[in-house]
Length: 253
Image (cartoon, rainbow, N blue to C red; front, side, top):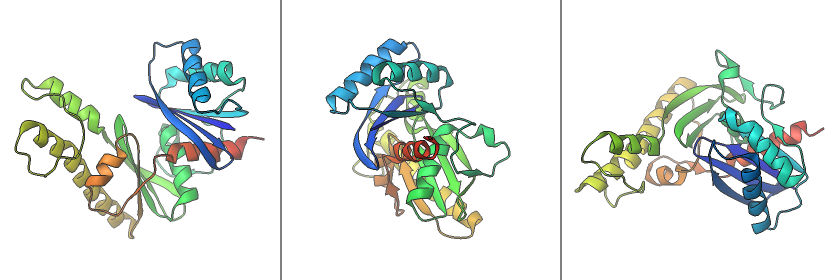
């Protein structure tokens, strides 16, 4: 079985597959202060809870460079296997057509690889995490660019922390768009406002592409935003784990 690990700024996503069959997935909090021993205990517990102790391969992608070495050692301790790390020396099969391909984040690369193998092209991928990213893939399967925005939770936390009278709120879809109290107004602004931004970006991306595109949504808040948009979208919560599995298979020899 393969252990796939995606290290994000807020969460570390773990997933186990047996071939193409998903076995289990879960999240750990990203903590720069934890040691390899502490992470190995958590990874071991995750695997044992889900009955997935027989790990014979592992792969890691990360947007937190400071944690790669720690988590790689943790995987070795917990699974007795050396983890592959997505980086410049790894074959992904993704054609990256931007000014400086080395700038493209590992999470975007992994997500794009999954999309190319799973969905009709061209495609637009939105990842709603600590930051919100949109990746545009043309009909040839090339990454041609995208946008980076403030994440939904990051923005609303900043709003609450920077104002005297706005509270912390749970990010969920309000019962109606026009908020009649502060909490609902903030929910509408964060959820419906983000959904409207998504719709506007898709329209403009498609105008530049010159054709309609498949729209895929992933990330921790993906389901919430997808529920508020009027566009036809696909929510794929396993997108990065699928991409990691595909990249592992390309490089396992």
